[in-house]
Length: 135
Length: 171
Image (cartoon, rainbow over all chains, first blue to last red; front, side):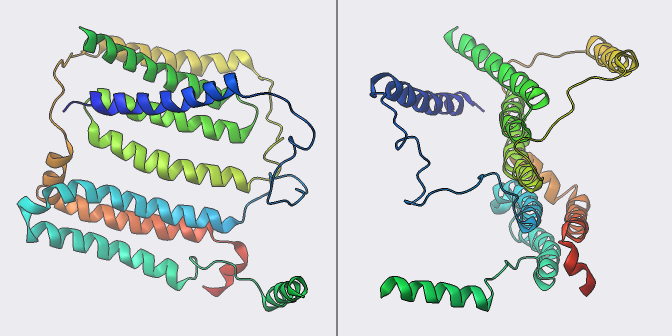
């Protein structure tokens, strides 16, 4: 197995990015002023630090993702052999996925996949603001 | 000859990438920058696996460590309070006591490196994924299915521990 083409591809991709940034740095005019240096956020003035704490739910979702990431990893050697081993391999993987399906059912039933929904008060506020904008 | 030179160049690039970014992980003051530097360390290790003809291991390194565990670490960092200017202790205490395990571990590693027989495999061996899959689905079928039980247990256990506190009452 020759990995040379893959390495050449990766090297070419990295070189392209660096070359683009370098050319940009070399030929772009450099005249900063206070307005240009502000953080552009859809015309809004950014308030506070962007380094805020994330919701714990991101971590829980990432944990669930990690388990099913490992499941996907097992699909690769299975998929390569699917044609030669036929129905046998198919049943093997069906059992494997069913067992992990129990885990998915568990996190689903325990509402770990549910995101925080805006409360009724939030929705009313948004609706009122939209009406004000339209008026 | 040119291919040999290129291979050597890529190998040394990967070595420098791995070790260099690992040093950044350890010595950087900002915990988020350390987490991002870990990305390059893990990618470098994946590249070194390719050099060892372990192509499936390299793919799993990219998929699980770079795609999964690093994401988890970065979310973990995002969850820490004051993550941007967190004070990491800079002083080293008890230098002489620390020297003992360092020398001990270094000695063991040096001994293993010296006593191991190193074989040079010049032609890259065949891709491993197909044989691995064949063995997993026939000879090692039971461990393969047990692995899914292990993953299930890990999922339920990890979620149980990581779940936000206020929802603990409902079970």
